[in-house]
Amino acid sequence: MRLIFLGPPGCGKGTQAQRIISDYRIPQISTGDLLRQAVRDKTALGKEAKKFMDRGELVPDEVVVGMVKERLLANDCKGGFLLDGFPRTVAQAEALDRTLQKMKLKLNAVVSIEVPDPEVVKRLAGRRTCPKCQAMYHVIFNPAQNQNVCDKCGSELYQRDDDQEDTIQARLEVYHRQTAPLIEYYQKQGLVKPVTGMGSIDEIYGRIRQALGDRAG
Ligand code: AP5
Ligand code: MG
Ligand code: ZN
Image: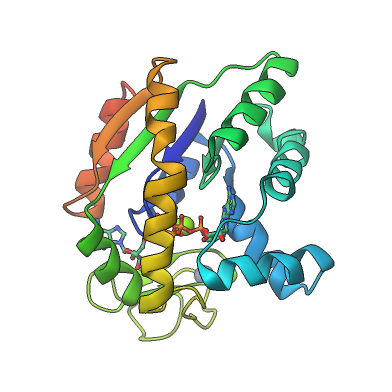
């Protein structure tokens, strides 16, 4: 299965990805996670990317396209993959199309997770993330059993630098301007599966599985 998760910040891409990758046994390729790792490792790329991320803007296309191309060549992508947060611009989508064509691969579906802006703000303001296993929590909607400790791996949870009110607004604007046009781009390829991103995490997961022609297992 070769999938894309498309949707505004905080729509639940990362949360739902965790279940997809365990049920379909495919890797999650999150450009946001890869970039945050580069920031933590203080690489040249990480230092450059941080400037854009802290403002809620997109990192330049050539940087993320290069990262994804390299990642797609890894052995664990042979049986499929889930792209989370990539592509985010038409130029990125075109680059991905060219790469997949060269690899003689086709996408199966683009899951478009729909959540209104005010809900995004609520979700991101209370999000806590595990830096080690990428598990996602929310102080009210999905709290960890032990306040600031990951249920799955015991690491200390943290709040992302870009989950501040101003930056959340900037990310939303960037989404509507630069990323939302991809829905139409992929509609033309007949790949879009719209899914309502409101409701419980389980309900939404069921909708995604149904949209993929599967029943949640
Ligand atoms: P990225 O890391 O991709 O962030 P994003 O797209 O803004 O999305 P998020 O990760 O914030 O949200 P999510 O949809 O994964 O939601 P989550 O599951 O965590 O990108 C960050 C930055 O990196 C960008 O701004 C850009 O600078 C750069 N970047 C990344 N990719 C790039 C690219 N391709 N090109 C250029 N730049 C790029 O859920 C959110 C919260 O809601 C959690 O607390 C969760 O517990 C809670 N929640 C989840 N589901 C529900 C529910 N059903 N009900 C209630 N709460 C819920
Ligand atoms: Mg995410
Ligand atoms: Zn963890």
